[in-house]
Amino acid sequence: MVIVYQLIVLFILGITIWTALDEEDRYLQATAALVAIPLALRLLMIK
Amino acid sequence: MSGMKAAMKIKRIHGIVMLAVAGVVTVVVALDFLAMRQPLPIFPGPGVTEVRPLSAYFPAIRGSRGDTEVYFLQGQDPGGTVLVLGGVHPNEASGHVAAVILVEKAAVQAGRLIVIPRANGSGFTHSDPQEATPQEFGIPTPSGVRRFRYGSRSTSPMDQWPDPDIYLHYPSGQTLSGNQTRNLNRAFPGRPDGNFTEQVAYAITEIVRREKVDLLIDLHEASPEYPVINAIVAHERAMPLAVETVLGLELRDIKIGLEPSPQNLHGLTHREIGDHTQALAVLMETANPAQGRLRGKTSEELILTGKDRMYINAYGAKRLYVDFDEKGHPLAGRVCRHLAGIDEFLKAFSAATPGRAVVLRSLPQPENIRDQGIGAFLN
Image: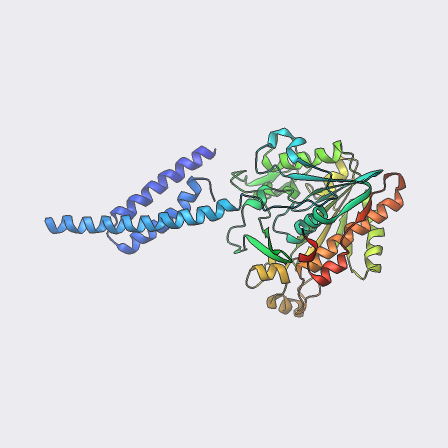
C-alpha cells in the first residue's frame, strides 16, 4: 500500500517539477516549487 | 526565433532557481522533522534497578518507533507491582513529565514500580498537522534548560498508514472514526497480528500479564472544555481504591472528580486492562489548555504556564469544566496533581492489600513541585 502511495506522490512531484521548469508565468513557477516541498517530504517518508 | 529561445532559457533558469530554493527549504525542514525521531534523554535515578525495552514483551516491535524504555524500580522488601504509563498521548505533557520525575527521583522500599514515560514512542516523533504546536518545550533546571518533546496524540502515519474510514476495535467490534486507529488509548488490549498501534498496546498488556501488575495508573490530560477533567476514571474493580484516593487528595486540598469507566467505550486502558487482565486500572486527567480548541497562541509558554486569555473568557461564559483565571493551569501544578494521585493510590492500595504493598522510599513532595517548579526535581 505504501509503495502505491509513493508512486502516486512521485508522479505528482514529477508533474510539479516539470511545471516549475516549463511554466511561463513566474508566479505559477514559484507556486509549483513550493508545492514540491511537502511532496518531496512525503516521498521520502519524512513527514 | 533567437528571442524565443532566449525567453525559454530565462524561463528555465527561473524555474531551476526556484526549485533550488525549494530544495534548500526541503532539506532544512526535513532535518527539523527527522530530529524529532531522536528521543530526548531521560536520566534514571538511583531508584531504577533495571531498564528493558518494550520489545522484550513482544519482539515484533523491536527496532521500530513503537519500542520504548520500560523502567523498573524494585524495592528491597517484597510486595506487589504498580505500572505507571506516561505519554500514551504524547501531546499531554504532564503525564509524560510526571513519569520522567518518577524515573529520575523516586525510589521504592517495598514491592515494585514499573514506569513507561513514552508509552507511544511513535507519537513523540511527530506533531499534529495544522495545530501549530511546538515540537518541544523547555523546563529551566539548575544545570540549564531541559528539553521535552511535545508530540502528537496519535501514532505517526509514517509508522501506520492509511487510516480506514471506520476503526473497528478488537475484540469488542466497537466502531469509531477511522483516525482513532492510531490512538493508542483506543487500541487496548491490542493483538499480536494487529496494526502497529495494536501491537504496541499488546506489548504493554503483556507487561501487565507477565509482571503480574496489580495496579495500572495511566496519566493523561484533556482540554479545559472537556467534561472529564481534573478527574480519576476507574474500572469498576478499582472503584473502591479510587474512592480512597479521592479522599486522600481532598485532604491534601487537591480537588478531583471520580468517573466510572464507561462499560461500552472500548480500547481505553481503564476499560480493557481492567477487563482482560488481573490488574486494577485507573486513569488520571489534568487540564491542559494547549490541547483545547478555544486556545489562543499555541506556544511553549502556553504549555508551561497554562495561561490563556481566551480560556478566561470561556470560563466567564460558563463554557468550561474547570475553574480558569489569570493564574492558568501551570504544568508544575498539573504534574503535582499526577504525582500526588500516584502517591495516594499507592498508599490506598498498600493499606487495602498489605501482602502486595508498594511503598515508596522517596518521592519529591508533589506540592513542592507545584510551588518551586519542576526544574528542581529533574536530574
